Image (tube, rainbow, N blue to C red; front, side, top):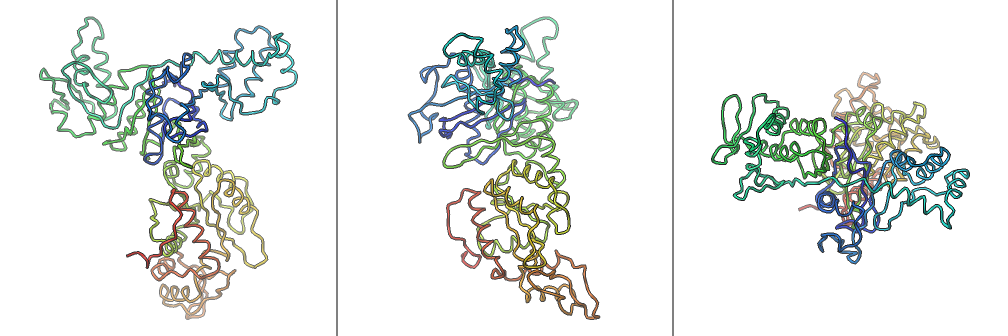
Length: 577
């Protein structure tokens, strides 16, 4: 189904947890997901769209008196000022609207240049409703001198550019007006005596009864009822499923001629029915949904979103914690988080290049978006060492909750190895990851075989890119991560793992420390890194090797900062009661 975008984008400030800086959200698509931790502000965005969009997005919006805002809708830290709202329009569509009434092609081109000067990197032109003015993302001087002269000469007024700006603004006034409903996370299917119904499912038995037994006569009077049952069949992939309401106002489900009360089939089907009645029986509206994944198997979640995208004409705004939903193709994803006491929003990238980067690694976009902090290492043995050392320094940190460890082995950053040539593609891959989640730490082997050997330029650029986003880049002081293991511990591990171990070939700061001589005096070059790492990590961690303790301290601080933890002294394992 062709996407119908009724709300192209939205920017908010001074609303609930939003601070004084506008948070830009756009461009919106037919399906839009808002992801983030609890109390990050996801619900506030949905509440604004569902409760205030028609007031704030219409051209009649003037002052606070024109809205139904409550005291709690204002940011308690900056209570005196009401919500600030900005809307957007696709620059190309705005060009078509604005130049339609102009006959001269040179003036049309000049006005297109002016619109382009207000366009952001996403090709959107933003209009601040409170200030009644376009938001400048780029300097006006980017317009060619020829276009400026044409626009100045067209209107013989003291401020011709203001006239042109108003002309653009006037063409943004017919953007909105779609009805909006909100489906809360607490949903139920009930009957009401007054025959009313609400989007949370109250009175939906009445609503289903109406379309099952309509008062109208004629052709296709059961179209909506059939459409609802078709929705259930396609999402559940149960061809015989059908719902109906009895004369006692009880909702039943029929599957293969077996009739059962809805309550006997679990909460999942009830959730689907509430979502289905709201989404299938409405056309061309905005629909906000809180956590549609509740009580639904991941497969049902995928089918549900696919149906909403392909079979309905609504635009959806969804708050979710579901990794399954976040991985939906052709959806817009916005990360909502807290920073400096305010709600912040950033768009997660959705280009094929960025997702192919993750696919090369074997990860989904949800793995990155939902992690508070990601520590990238080369392989599984590095993960063992990092967890071992982190636990020694601060045992309160939990992998999978406070941080995730992922592997960059394979194509991504392949040129971080010592002998490979530098690669621009590696840096682009890193930037793609940084755009998905900026809380990145990278552990990279220096691969130096002498003290004076420089770090290759790719690694230096990785360090530079991470510095730009306040990330952490740890390049080993020795040749590789195994050089952080003391000579004694490495020898003990090798002798335990390999009964024919005689002695290490070398154990210096810039040596390969795993190869060894066997008891038959032959060299053992192929050594199982994981086997050795598991043995070493079963022993007491030693941090007084090279700069290891300083780097682990730095990583502990970084993880706490990414999680918004207060600055506290690390708690080593032996200090936990």
